[in-house]
Image (cartoon, rainbow, N blue to C red; front, top):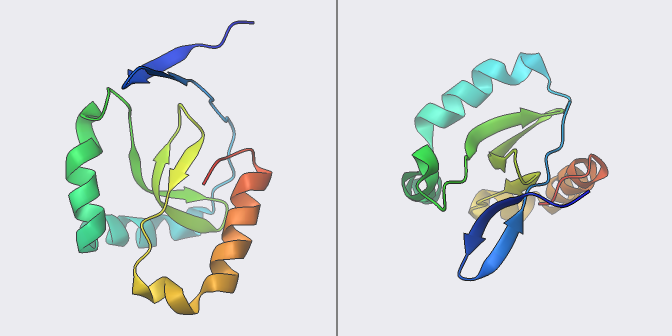
Length: 110
């Protein structure tokens, strides 16, 4: 089976890697919604650059629930998570490592 090209960025082929049926804790729905509305400055700046398929026609989800975690940005077609961590994460290294291991166990890239 041939890999599907999602986009080409500066001559590099970006191949589709869709991960289906990800777990999601429905109890985090309200918190994710609040985080989307609040947004910290670096996340808002990033979002303004990538929302509405502006970045190489790639679709980004913001504050996506995966398992018991809310990730900053998720690209479903790539199975890719982008975290924009500020200083609040300096004291949460164990939490971040646990989150990353869980997400990678689902086949996602962080």
